[in-house]
Image (cartoon, rainbow, N blue to C red):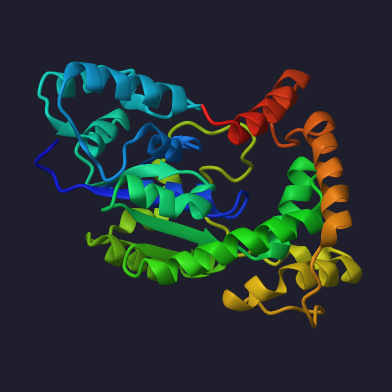
Length: 323
C-alpha cells in the first residue's frame, strides 16, 4: 500500500446539502475510497498530531490506534477491525497519515478520506493535521436545504438558513485561503451536468476520469437507513423544491442567507436586503430544534425510536465536549 501515491481527501458541505451523493459518485471511481462520517477526527490536533509526525514505537502506535477508535463515533474506520492495521505495527516508523490511511481500510485506492459535513468548517484544523490533504466541498441552495431539514428533522428553517449562511461563508473564504487544495462544486450542477462536474473533481485530484462516476448507483453497497435517495440514480429535477414554500417564508430565508447566497450565485426570488436572524430568532430556533430532536428525530428512518432520538441529543453534547 505504501508504494501507491496517496491523496488524502476530506469531503464536506452542509447536512442535507449533497454530501452523501457526492461521496457515492466519488466512490464509484475505482481509485477513490471515501469512508463515512468521522465528526471528531479533527480532535487529533488536540492530541498533538500536527504536521503528520512519525510514529516510531509500538507504544506510540497503540496510543494512536486507541485515540482513533475513541474518535470513530460511527465505526467507519473499517481498517481498525479487519486486521490490516497490524501489518503497520510491525513495520515502524510510519507517519500518522500512513497509519490513518490503513485505518480507513484502503486496498490500494489512490484517493482516500472521509465524508463529514462538518469538514467544511474544520478544514483549517484538518490541514494542520495533514499539510498535504485536500478538501472537496459541495454547496446546495439554502432554500432547498432548509426545506429538507424541516421535512426530515422538523427543524426551524430560519435558524437553518443562518447556520448555512455562516458555514458556507467559511467555505468560500477557505477556498481563497488554500488555492489548489479546496475544490467547491454546486449540488445543482452535479445533478444537471454530472460528467462536467466529475471531470472537474478528477482534474482537481490529478487522476483520470472514470465513466463509472456517471452510474454511481450501480456500485453502492449497503443502503443507509434514514437517507431517502441513498444509492439511487441521480434525478436532475431534484432541485428548486423550495418553490412550494409560502412566499413570506422564502423571503425570510433569503434575507437571512443573502450575503452567502450572492457568493455562490444563488439568486433570491424575493429577498432584497440582508436582515440577520437576531438574538430572539436564535433563541426561538434553538428551543424549537431541541424539541425536534426529542419529538421528531428523523422521519425518514425506519428506526426512529425514542432511544434513537435521545442518541441525537447525546451526540450533540459530545460534539461540544472535548475528549
